[in-house]
Image (cartoon, rainbow, N blue to C red):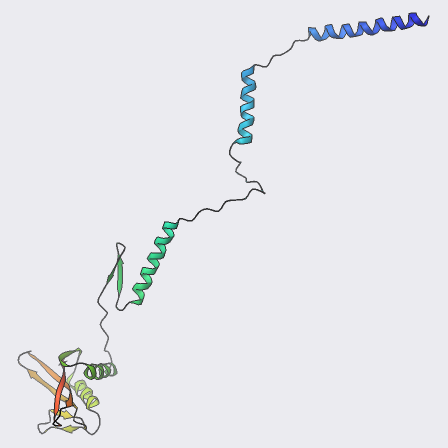
Length: 209
């Protein structure tokens, strides 16, 4: 009895397996073409190997941009040129990348004190004849002459010349000079020679307005 039962169960089991195999054979199998498979593989490779996305990864170090050495050197040279221009005497201009030095600006002599300083300074070191770089009225010229010769000066017989107490400075009042066709005053500086006489070595002309 047991043997029959086992035999029947075995037949049923075998029948079920055979039915499943026949059903699987009847199902349609969709074949994927090789071309589409290769395209998908290429897409995957592009995603893995291609350029990174716009958002950089947190752990990815960002390489700093290299500075342009040539441009930096040019800017340094330009700044050094400007510094040199500002440190040199007179005004300087830069045009077409070249530094051109202009003549120094003329000094301003708006006050009588500035004119006195110029007279004393130039007569102390200059020799020969020259014209002062400013003009004055006759009244102002006399004030400058009185300041130049100092206190206790001596007046000549004709009253045109004032001589300092030590005899080494002289102011001559303004007179008309036919050759120059203008009125001029004179400031003179002298030195003593071996014989004790005064020799005038400096003579500054002051034009009268």
